[in-house]
Image (tube, rainbow, N blue to C red; front, side, top):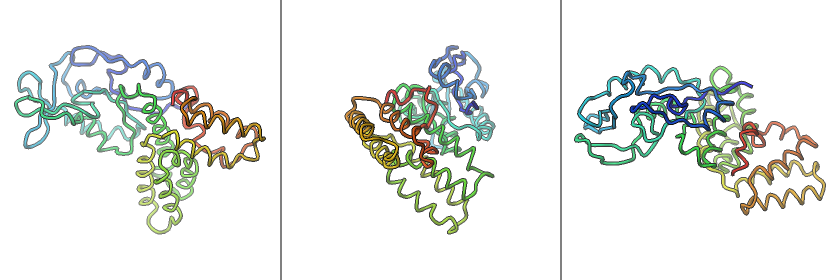
Length: 315
């Protein structure tokens, strides 16, 4: 199985690169995700030349912009950090996702403390300098903080997005772009889209209805931005039920009366929060396997990522 290239903050792999010489080892990343993701580890502070151990740093806002300053004193590491960022960002285009270390003035994705010129906290809505540059350069790339991956819904959503983005990059992006490749991608992800955002699902179909109205590159660019926006939305139980009911319509000939009854009972149980998503989804997959429907065989919604990740056991 080919592993998917994903960026990660080096300290999450258990490497002792933090300012105090410690690490923030994430066993979930090293023991579970590493079977499917090929990690590219980056520690911006270490690689910008700040060394280990090093003085703690924070973000200070000046009239001319944000700077990285040592928390004790005035030593300014902004130029070193910006130089590193300028060098490394162009080399990350092949990544399909990124897992960042929270609360870091270089890697934090959100809620980072911003200080004034005197070093006093003035707000807590900042983003680490490296994280900001990464998300600006690659707005489609799924990015998440390691701590947030402890939330079952956020974890499932992030990994689903990584696999979908990988599909796009491998099969549609750049030189692979053809009308057929774009339509096939949309067809594969239809039920996923429907579950995540029926509103965007209804926009994307017509967009692909007339591929001669403007350059294909422009349509594809608009399409993938809307697609990834839809995929970033959490799926409610009601939205999953809606998608499963659509899917069930294609399987009516594959299910006997009794099987169908059990299926609907388990969908209701899922809707009420009594069983996880894996239960009705497994029944749908069994029906599809028994009497395959070509259209459903291609649907990523049935298997958006490897089963062994067990993500649907907890949502």
